[in-house]
Image (cartoon, rainbow, N blue to C red; front, side, top):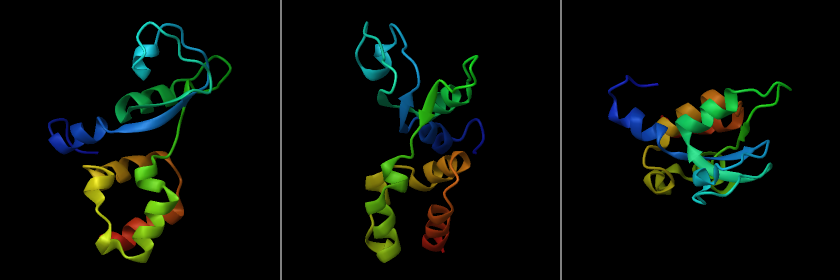
Length: 125
């Protein structure tokens, strides 16, 4: 996590990650670019990382989180991870995400992905 004034940290927090909502949210369709509509339970939509993490840690009285964060395909997709394992020099990381390593570091704080950690550590050497 960068400092408050770190532009890379700010841009990383603005990267969108997929989220699946665990309940109906009336009138919040603008989060999914549908103003005035409802968001239905089990609906997946990309949200900025800062908002997605806040919603994922908030719990309903039943203990269920408001939304479930899904691993972004740009970081943990099978095709992307296999390409990094095969030959990391030919993978255009900027095409996957403008701030790939910053986003990967933030994502790996939230998910327990040992294989992905190993691949990214090997690639960064």
